[in-house]
Image (cartoon, rainbow over all chains, first blue to last red):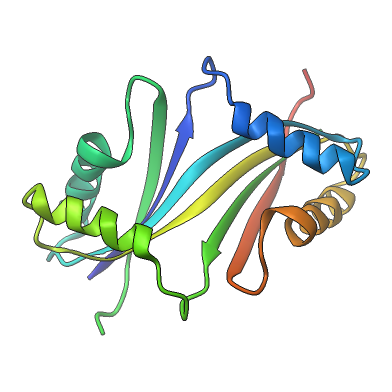
Length: 85
Length: 85
């Protein structure tokens, strides 16, 4: 059993209005040293495969087919082995 | 200048209907070996402080005050030094 931790982020060239809104909220709390706030998605899932390599391939395919819109988003992930339970 | 990468996740005891919906979508694509899908938020921001320690303190405060609802969510972050530009 493997666990994948996936980050999906907007490409740098794409405007992030949600990030801007959060940044304004942070600044209105009095933090004046925060900038470039960008919001993405974080997905954790478990993959029941025999090998690390296979888990990585499955995760990459799930990202490409479903989790990330590759026109606007980038993704990165790490896969670690976990004990099944 | 420091960059913080923050993950905000639902606590394990909290049901995650969005994660379940994504899991069903993944399974309907033909992946039968995916389970325990959970969705969180991922936030990147830059912090203009002199020290690593101060950047960490600011990030933690922003998480507690704004980014995470500590009743339902956990957060973790890493802070790395970046060149200002």
